[in-house]
Amino acid sequence: MPIENSFQHDVMSRKNPGERLTVREIAPTALLESPPGQDAMAALGKRLSQTGVRVIVLLHGSIMGTDVFGVQRLDELGGLKRGYSRGVAGLDALLALMRDGSNGISPLPGGLKPPLVNDDATKKLLDEQIGDAGNFTNAYVELMRQSLNRGLDRPIHCVRELWSCEHHHLGRAMAAVSMLGRLRDWSETHKLEQGDRILVHAHGQAGLVLALVSNLLCVASTSSRTRLLDLLSDFASQVNRPDIASTIQRVAPLLSNGTLLNSATLDVVTFGMPVRYGWDSSGLGKLLHIVNHRNLRTDGKTWLSKMELPQITMEMPIAWGGDYMQELAVAGSDAMPTTEAAKATNKAVWELVEPYDGFERWLENARRAVRFPSEGRCLLIDYKDSTGSTNVRDHYYGHAAYTRLNTMLFNTTEIVRTLYS
Image: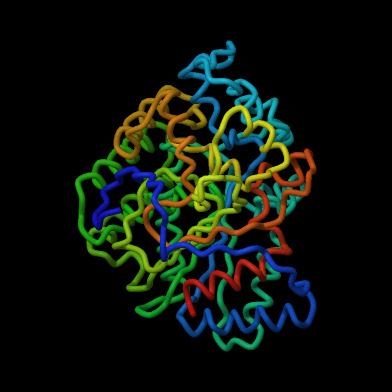
């Protein structure tokens, strides 16, 4: 994407990423709690510290209770609840695998729905309900903190952040503003300066939040940034969200003069992020996208996923081809805001950040089978999570593997090797 991307949608190129792409298979490693695993993580922590990483942020949502495939928008557009399938063979079966109530993903207790609150109680609930499946647990964060910092004079601060999981444009834009406020907090609290780095691990659609953050951090002031912040400010005043209004007032001048991070650098790693918003690299340091992928194609384009109907409905229940949430939650899909004010603002934000709408456009985007954005390094990893099990909780359609405790050492090794070697 161009410098000063100004919130343009990604072009979703099917071209070979070339030198940007690396392919890996997860390798059996010593248990992280074992002495060899601890030694390996300590060495990685030393390297991260040497390259200036001072804060690691683990940003995630919840697979449960959040319409992660975004079928609400598809149902609204196409009348799919009435079985409307545009005459595409196998589509009704695919949509059943995506839709809340028939996709095998349990709701959260008590009917808890987004916006989720970034507090200890909600994080504890997620840990109890889904463990480390697409969820950076407290145990994960603590183990990372202890193992990376062994022997470091200046510890790396490891922080767990839960975003609201509002899977629509307004929700992601509000989360991006909140993240800017948090980035400012960490820069001030830890006295970051030039040469220091904040590294964000963003799982799933949390990566889209960071894509918006990258556009907001653009080194040049843009009319699109002003427009977006004005939309969010007006909405915040309508719905009594003083936290958003005050954060915008706080960060807007810092964005204009480029001082939000106190001259520190923001690096981002995404895990299983759908390809939607474009990235603006001018406000970022390093950028890496990791996708759970197993090649099922016969045309040699191993960097693409496979989107063929009706075959995909046989592959998804065992996560045969990798991460199907990453593949299917593309432009045209989304959860729906619940109030008229939110719907109106969501439409205005959508007009700014995404040109695609309509059922056919969603199907077209999904069939493009693109695994990676046009910006950043790319890692295709076979996480070996397709075991033949049709129990959704074992893999959540390939979207759970990234945050498992037993992949921490592997992921950290690959991140350091790719970005900080």
